[in-house]
Image (cartoon, rainbow, N blue to C red; front, side, top):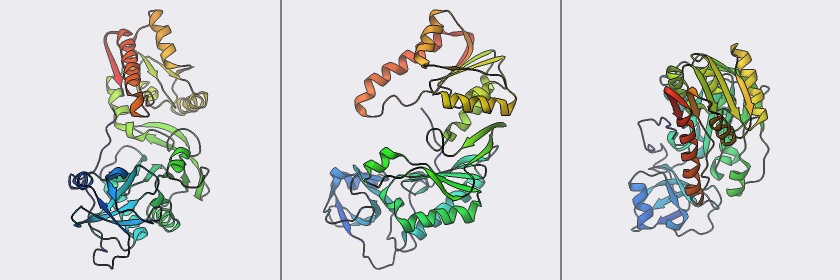
Length: 352
């Protein structure tokens, strides 16, 4: 399981526009939906929303409990099962202005939090009170994702880009598009691309290890920055011969290489391995990269009696939906059992 650090101020502050006139449409929640908000959950599902009528996609809506008590302001989705994403306990007069204010707060918060890297998550959706917005920084290139109807509105987009430009002064801002998310949110198809500036690729450092970054290639926003602390922790325990399954572009493998006598990385994606090899070259490290299905490779290695002192498992998500859960648990069990059997006495398994 990946643990992501969330700031201690765990709920949205009231907006400065709480005394403004109320022109936003309203929704009423079921008792169950109201209780979710009172328990400080930021979402309400469509089945717990009543009184929806002619609400525009991505609109700001005033949220009330069954008795009519005002609970705050939310971003509304006309298509997602997550119909309500809370943005404030109070009223919101200016959503682009509020988004800009919260981006600045997120940037300021990380100035004292982030160390030993020039790549980190700048904005983390609900954790920064900005539902549907993710921004990652890779040195002088920013990569963002917009995942909700409200954040996709032109005035909000303009506020996002302008605030990031003025606060972080990047050489380029790239938008990475999740086509499936835009389809679910009933947003028009959009290619990934450069939103601002001239630069979409760069180099960055994490825990003293260098990486190349191409903002228009790879998964997610380009790298798995939420694993940064885990990469460093794995390096502390690494020794001897190391195997990194599902190695992607090599972040675990290259951290292991600082302490291990040899490292083998396995992934099914040739483009990912090509980038991993460039990253190894950047750090002056020798790593054996193997293109193949990690399940098959582990099965083959186990049958051949191959053993390692350090094994890392960091697979992609096996359970995309609840229907996949039982099969996913079986897959995780098989992976970890094989890895444990391949460890020498005193070996270390890092499993994510």
